[in-house]
Length: 308
Image (cartoon, rainbow, N blue to C red; front, side, top):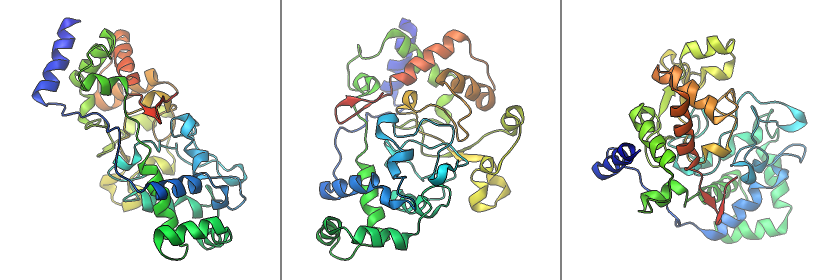
């Protein structure tokens, strides 16, 4: 065990991982954050008044809905797993297929998706304008009328506030070597040693690149659907087929099920699948357990409370 602790210390001291703790505070327009929080939870954004952004990105469910695929208006099932909204501002693009360049662009999409919110932006703007408290807030903060663009901006500003600092791993990075158990330290070293960081890199362990799910994965799973084409659905470039944005692993222990298809029900299963199809290796049970324990140490806090 001391050897693994030595490896971890070496990685940190040499900067080979170059991991920094999630910041405890970031500079934001707090009034826009409050307005965006209200909009994020407002079901008026949907056609039948039943769905809000928080329906698929519940803050008490790891920023997801913990379902294989999300459910929109009229009970319609979407084609893909809902990614977490926590720390989402740190993704280099938004959505699994990267079709939105930032949070503002992402916020514009679900409203007019017939399987998600099933509404038009024209109607949403009318409904928001009908509420005097909303119009006063938009006048004060945006200096003008309510528009879909400033609605999206307010929601995005709220989403930028959804940082989750102070995980056990962050405390470890800050110098508290008792913050991680020996098994978590071993898992951290194995995570690097086995090659997981080739995709899950940076402070958020992902969110900064596209990677391909091998065709063998889909074959073994039992076939393909349109969502499996990933980035190809946006670019129509054959070289992009089966490519997806690599998800961040911060808070991964509270966001099951996993992958774009929600196919892995547990973190243990997800780790084994990634080892097999992405790294071409088979982990022992003890290696899997150690890596899973390390990943659990990445669960941070929101408003002073650990995510569950």
